[in-house]
Amino acid sequence: MKYDSAIKCISPELSRDIATLVIGETPNLEPISESLPADERRADFIAKIVGCEESLIHIEFQTRYDPMMPVRMLTYYARILDKHGLPVYPIVVYLTKTESPIETTYSSHVGDRHVLTFDYEVVKVWELKSKMVFKEKLAGLYALTPLMPDANLAECREKMIEAIRENLISANSYMCMATLASLIHSKEVVNDFFTKNRVKTALREWISDIPS
Image 1 (cartoon, rainbow, N blue to C red):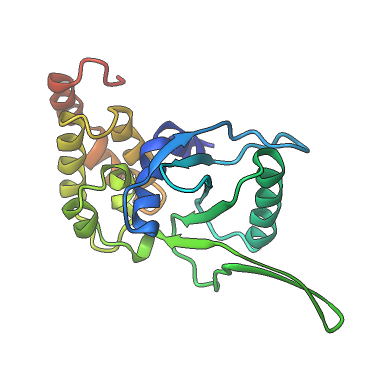
Image 2: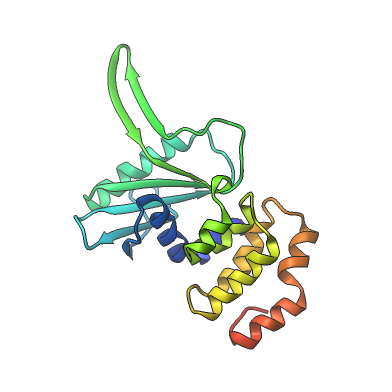
């Protein structure tokens, strides 16, 4: 799926700044293999948090609401713990708005006996503000800014180009931004702001390996 490919393309930078947003400081992350035991289904992003107690961060990106997410996150947690033997901080990032209540907990009871409560963090991109992202220079999140409620697409484009020029994020992030913008914006709008020849020409002046 094109959105999954876009997320994978910028996963290290995006995940770093999601972690910064949630934890409150920029962590030193050391990405590790996302393949897991059992069926070898890959998680979106797993990294060691370096420089503090040994722990991991696990981030899943969802384009749309998934009612089974609590169970999925619990199974990811168990398999990551089984493979690495370290505490895991789990986060789900939802990219597009939903009216459904989003769970942040899986709870299990048998009769009147409590068996398990599992909590995870949820980031709702539609509750973030692009102005805050740009002010804090969370360049890893720039590709998501067209999905934010205060987004000005021209500003999103210019801030992304500026971040690429300053080597804050890879050149591939620009086309990932265009792909993710299409989650909520029409094809015509995305073409107008992100894929016109004048924009590609401007990028090529600064980055020789920008995709055609």
